[in-house]
Length: 137
Image 1 (tube, helix red, strand yellow):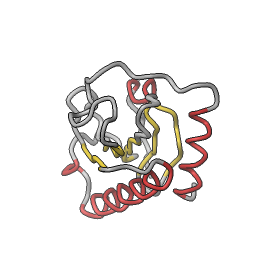
Image 2 (tube, helix red, strand yellow):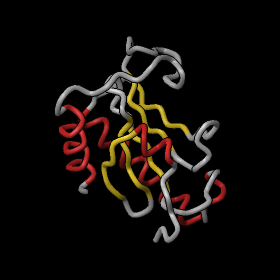
Image 3 (cartoon, rainbow, N blue to C red):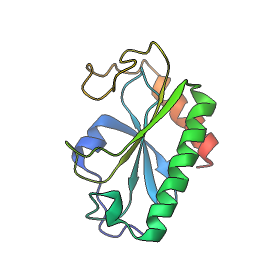
Image 4 (cartoon, helix red, strand yellow):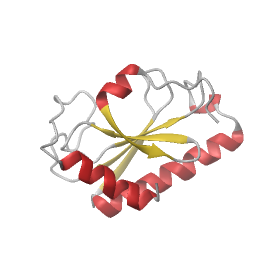
């Protein structure tokens, strides 16, 4: 699984690793305002969801559901946003982002809204561990 897979440098720089599900690498965005996961299928050369096999597409959506449930457990939200944009980072990745009415970007999109806010000392590792527990990683 994933022979030849390399994570895009920008995703590496912008996230903390959480772990690997059967298909996707799970990452936490480096922005303390949002408990924001990114799922990256560990398949080389993927750009669009349609590039995946039918089996991998089905697995991707199972993992998106699993990530959403984990996020709702640790970061209750009013709305769960799911998106695969790829305008800046071409490598196929899916954002799973819990939103709360009144958050920094509400009701608009978080992408490009404002600079990320760094996690405080120990915050990100605690959130990563909580997410790992919910995802059974």
